[in-house]
Image 1 (cartoon, rainbow, N blue to C red):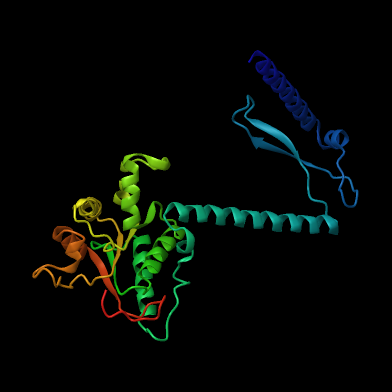
Image 2: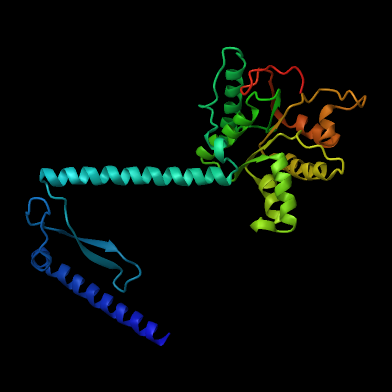
Length: 313
């Protein structure tokens, strides 16, 4: 440890001495800098003359630092090299921004094909004229969220037949919101969310804390919960978790997107007086879902996967 401290002191002393010499050189003027540093263009060999500039440096005793700033040589080779370097830097910056954006999508739950699920990649269909208007409606909802004009009913319901693009447009909404600068957006499959929640009880495989997982859906600025009617729960646990999340968002009036297959008005043939969705959620939370809706969009076209127009779900 003592040896390391001595090395650090030595490096610090060298830096301070070098810094002091450079300041003295700049104070002596451009000619002194040219004579001491003697820099030339690497392409044409012409001597480069710097400009002495003063920079703010509040961490120093004087509060400023003087530095020689060398220009780019005006020869054709230097200009071409500068253009090449600028193009390379711009490319790297684009790649860095794209990587950072991809990471934000991944953290939001948009991995795999979902990361490429956008409004632009949602294809219209000749055999289903209603597909394009549904895309427009979901996009309008996101625009309303981004401009804080969604109003008192900030929930969007996407329901209908299998394979008709509900998941794609829900993911596209989250993708568009993130692209628009809205923080804390999440896309979650309800069944995967419940599995993740169960795994967190034992903190297996580095899972996050239960409270953090629940907090994502409760406090997210915009969330999409996909396939709410894919898991039946005889024990009632999943229904309680759903109530916890949706009731919190309902009271806070937070924008929410929900997808399921059943029409909210479809009666349960096995239970007179009950709706099909009550197999998956309590009547109290279903009432909140319907009451908070910005719009309920019916996806009644043929499947993008199989081409079949399923008559029942």
